[in-house]
Amino acid sequence: MTPPSASAAVKDAPTTGDSGPEAPALTNSLKQRHLSMIALGGVIGAGLFVGSGAAIAAAGPSIIVAYAISGALVMLVMRMLGEMAAANPASGSFSVHAEKSIGPWAGFTAGWSFWFLLCVAVGLEGIGAAKILHGWIPGVPEWGFVAIFMLTFCVTNLISVRNFGEFEFWFSALKVLAIVAFLVIGVLAILGILPGSDADAPGLTNLTGEGGFFPTGSEGLIVGLLASVFAYGGLETVTIAAAESEHPVSGVAKAVRTAMWRIALFYVGSMAVIVTLVPWDTEALASPDKGSYVVTLEHLGLPAAGQIMNVVILVALLSAMNANIYGSSRMAASLVSRGQGPKALGRISGGVPRLAVVASSVFGFFSVLLSYWYPDTVFSWLLNMIGAIILVVWFFIAAAQLRMRRQLQREAPEKLVVKMWLFPYLTWLALAGMAAIFVLMAREEGTRVQLYYTGGLTVALAVIGYVLQRVRASKADASA
Image (cartoon, rainbow, N blue to C red; front, side):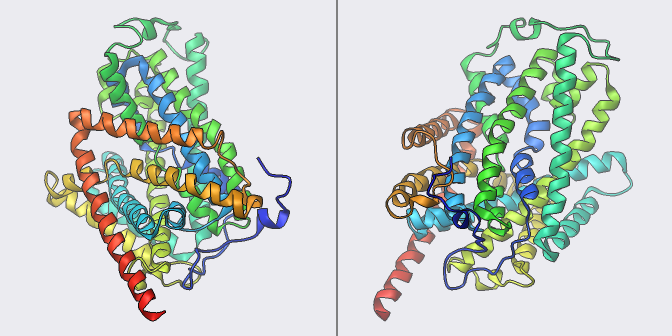
C-alpha cells in the first residue's frame, strides 16, 4: 500500500549501506528481476524438498494445517520486515532495525546470531550437495565436492554482487519451475488424467483413511508445525539484498508483495498434493535419502522425473549456499560498520566486503570439517545452537517493527511504502505465535535441547552486546 504522499524520489532513492560514519560503500547492481526471484526462491530449499517428508510421517495429512499455520506466521514476519526494509533499506536488514528501535545490544544479538546460523548452514548445505554428487560420482570424496562448492561460491561472491544476483536468479528460477511442474503433475494425477501414469485417481482415500486427517493427534501436528516453521527460513535475504539494488525502496516493496502468496501456494499446495497422492505412512517418506517430492513422483510411476527432482534438490542446496555466503558477509560488514565487530571484516573493495566473504566461507568450510572429525560432539553442538535462531531473529523483527512503525508515523509517514496489516494487532499476534512455538519446542524432547542451546547462545550474545553498548556510552560521556 503506497501512501499518496510518497514521492517517486522516496520510492527509488538508492540506499547503499547502513547508517554510520563507516557505512559500507556497497554497489547498486541488483535489478528488480534479481530481487523478485531472490524473494521467491530464497525460502525454497532442501527443507521443503527433503525435510518435509519426515514432517509428513509425523503429522500425516494434518501437515497441510501445520504448513498453513506456519505459512501465515511467515507471511506476517515478511510483511513486517518488508515495511522496515522499504522505509530504511540497509545491508544489515533486521539487525539495523533492531539497533535503531530497541538498542545496539539488540542489533548485535540479532546480527551475529544470524551470521552464525548462515555460516553453519553453508556447511550443512555443502554436505548435502556433496552426498548427492558422491552418489553419482563415487570416485570423488564428499569433502572434495564441498571444497569445489566453497571455492566456486566464494569466488563468485568476491567478484561482484551482480554475480551473486545472476546465480541466484537462475537457481531460483529452476526451483520455481520445478515446483510449478510438480504441482501441475500432482493435480493431473489427483484428477486421474496424468498421461503415462499407472496410478489411479486417489480421491480422498489418503486424506481420510489410515487414521483420518489427524492420525497422530495433536502431538503429530505439533511436530509437523515445528518442522514446517524452520522450512520457511530464508526470506530475510531479499531485504539484505535490497540495499544493493537499483531501486531499493520500490524494489523490496514489490518483491515482498509478489512473493508472499506464491510462497504460501508452493508450500501448502505441495503438501496437499503429496498427502493426497501418497499414503502418509509410506516408509520412504521418512527417509532423508529421497525426499517427499521424489517419493511422490516415483509413486506415480515416473522414476525419471524422480531423478530430475534430485537435480533440482542439488540446485536448491547450491542456491542456499550461494545466498547464505552472500547474506552472512553483508551482515558481518554491516555489524562492523556500526562498530560491532572486527574492523577488518568491514573493508570494502570493488563494492564487495571481500574479507567478510572469505571469513564466512572459511567458517562454513570449517563446520564441514567438524562434521567429519567430531560428528557426534562438536558438530552436533553446533547444530543444536542454530536450531531455533530463526525464531529469535523473527522475534527481533516483530519487536523492532512495533517501535519503528510508531516512530515513522510521527516523523516520516511518507516512508511507509509497505504497511503491516492491521497494525499493531497482527504484530502482537505474530509475537504470541512465536512464544507459543518456543513453548512447544520446550515440550518436545527432540527440540528441547535445541531450544536450550539456542537460548544459551542468544543470552551470551545479548550480554556481550549490552556490555559493548555500555562501554561505548561511557566513552561517549567521557569525551563529551
